[in-house]
Amino acid sequence: MIDNPRSPRVRAVAKLAKRAAREETGFFLVEGPQAVAEALSFHFELVIELYLTRSALDRYTDIAQAAVDAGVDVETVSDHVLETMADTVTPQGVIAVCDLLDVPLDRALHGAPQLVAVCVAVADPGNAGTVVRVADAAGADAVVLAGDTVDPHNGKAVRASTGSVFHLPIARERDAKLVVDACRGAGLATLVADAHGELNLHDPGVAPLLAGAVAWIFGGEAHGVPATVAERADHRVRVPIHGRAESLNLATAAAVCLYASVGARRLRSAPDE
Image 1 (cartoon, rainbow, N blue to C red):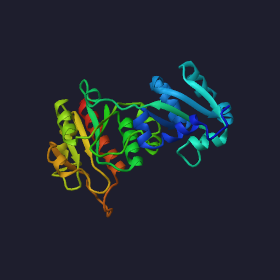
Image 2 (cartoon, rainbow, N blue to C red; image 1 turned 180 degrees about the vertical axis):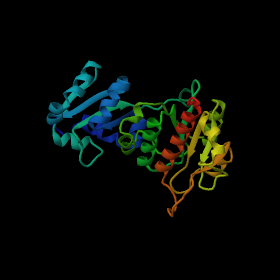
Image 3 (tube, one colour; image 1 turned 60 degrees about the vertical axis):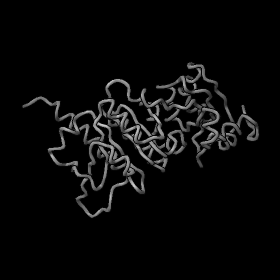
Image 4 (cartoon, rainbow, N blue to C red; image 1 turned 180 degrees about the horizontal axis):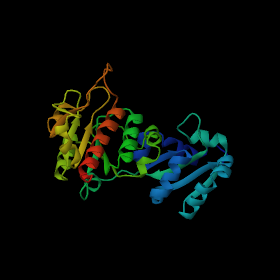
């Protein structure tokens, strides 16, 4: 039982809430039973340490056993120690330390991807994590975080993804224009979600484009996709606003666009009646 919140080990774990510490050590925090269970199920090799309170150990014996089976160092800690380690105000008693999970861009786009989500200059970690979750739900092949975009290992981003960060490849690349070119090189049509785009998402004539191999490019909350990046893409596609809402937020727009591609692909492959 670890019960000293000031011990070097506890402080080292707590520091991983900061990006600088994550980049220095190559580790990040995964909080909560759902996310930790997904990490152990899909990428157990990334899990280095698991910390549980006594009550969490009694409640989540399956998680603890899975960690032991994977050769992970499992430690029980006091409630106060776990609160010190955690990045959340009300932690759920389960924290894992994992290796960083992002992969090189060429690996994320390897093979013949059919659907990729690209986030450019997205600052809000909750939005970034939700886009990862939506992309996972839509069956996307990868997510790419381009330009000055939030770290996918940020605690809020990981929690917003509800474990989806462990389900599909995630790449980071500072040069957003290079990302557009790489997507095109992988055989993907590059579509920017743009409120003023020349194509209407609901235009029947756009369906064949959506049904093909596509990389959807989403921009930051305040200014959207930078003009230099949007100009490099193949098309700019607008989601029509039929009511009086001023706009859609990033995560909602991503869900609409990604599922539009899924729907168009399913209609294309459906047998003629």
